[in-house]
Image (tube, rainbow, N blue to C red; front, top):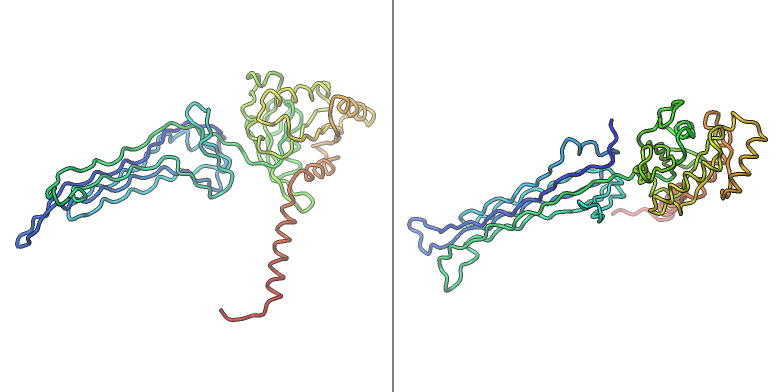
Length: 352
């Protein structure tokens, strides 16, 4: 499946149906008069976050969405049928932006969330509704309220608890494959990862979602390399893991490059807590590892975790540190189930 995290679409709600002009004329029945019914309401444009979607690829091939208009009013005071709503399904984590991308119109953060973005037009009045004591045979009616239309941008931001950042070839794909169920591509060349990857990590009886994004290089904020367009996928993360290749460029310089790009991007990424992991320590001796760790601490790292994504060395301590920044959902669920058990055991049975 292709990954697409941005799409521009056109949406249009349904117009209201026109009211009818009709008069009752039946043989042998007196007291005829206006009996034109009202028009039906046009369909709304509704967005809904659903489970099972993790890309906006469907919107590459379908870019125009139009709700149906309301039905016409009819004689015998019959109201036109209201049109069904047009429901557009999007992945959880999708944002809807205005055409100029200056305003966030909706933000979907949980399954089942629904937002009515455009409302359908109300149906027009039929001539029966214009009848008065002085206007016994009205012929006026309303055509129905016009529809609404607009172009919007859809932007997907993956929902993850922990994000991976680093220079290309820092070993992020190997790391996420080691600790999660992900199957990211691994290669001995830069930019092996071209699109974000998600993996579910199970550690100490708890689970969290880990996001791997393409590597950053100096000048990414100005479009160098793949640029910084994928940084939006880690905006919602609670903590970032910064992997640094011990066999690559100077670790302190690697730390500075990525930190500068996070600061240039903004959106609060430079304020998120970060865990610095010195990767590929299986390729170096202990003295070199300790020397580079001291350099990183001198460059501003609070703590450095020597790890090896290939062998698993040091990963337990790194995941323990990551868990300390995440809410313990397991404890909350266990506490809730214990309360339910006490309530079930403590009360006497009685028929309902």
